[in-house]
Length: 465
Image 1 (cartoon, one colour):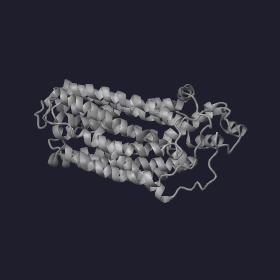
Image 2 (cartoon, helix red, strand yellow):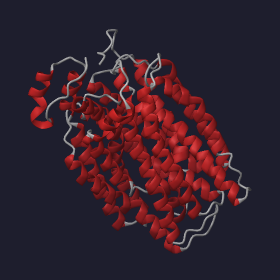
Image 3 (cartoon, helix red, strand yellow):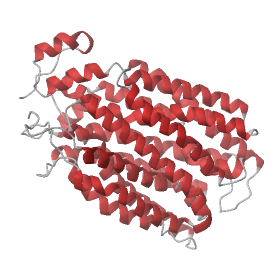
């Protein structure tokens, strides 16, 4: 295994900013397409049953192609780096596929609409995957300092949530006035502008890999034996399967509150607690282990969701206050969520002797997208069961409002409780990971690492130096 390169490893300010702002643009794309696809599809007249089928097919494929890309990333070595070349390749593809997606003809036949929607989303999702898998493990090539990686990813997630929030605030208002195609083109351009600086300023300097490529069998063995990677993203699956909120935000505003513009107000109200989380969390995790912060935030957010379900939304002032408070804790969760993947990468290397960043990152994105492939269709089918009527401006029966409210509040709360139960088996902590990273980069010996970690994690694997 190669040691870190001997050149200066200090990250430049422009690298950090470019990395963080990239997440802003990437998640403007996510908010534009992945979150709003079902609303866009119902507005152009595609039935809920067809939408559920489209989402199930496209999102399962979306999840499956992540491990495929992970294998490719681990086996294909560009001279210019391991991860940045993939990010650069994805840039023009995601631009073109996003515009194509919103060119879906409103007046086409049902078959044409379904085919266009399926092809358009598959093309977009594959382009998104091409940048999504490598961006989360890029910090492992930028620096070998675990705490610095945590800061990069935590602040990156903060910018990601800003991107989603910007989309959530702006899209309902702009779509109602200019239509989906105009919104799609405008947000695509803005997102690409934000993503571009990393393509120029990004630098990989700390590359840990074998001179000889590992086999697919070794990669799979790495994932299977990396129990904390499986536990953590198993918990994400538990939580995400019941998190329907992002799929029905506009429906909630339209049907329950009677005004689509209020979806923007709700998103705007989540912005301030998100800003507070974005400032506070990187500071807090310097003093408190990030896992404790993540677990506590899940518990509190779940409790608020349950209370909110019983209080209802008839009193908008109380509703907005509760959503504001909950927003701090859900913001903390989202900021910290993907900072755990690099930790699992270090554990995997320490435990198996292999290093497969691409495979580890693909597990992260696989579980994230598997959640969407199942939870989205479930939400659509539940709404269909409550009698939802498709078509822009359609009048909904009273039963739909009750169904939307259950999906909006109680579902996510139950999911977070299940995640908290699963996370009781996750034992990795930041201090442990730092020791593993030092062993993995040949800064301390096997004996030194085992003296500190053996009682908790067993023997270290023999690494090829």
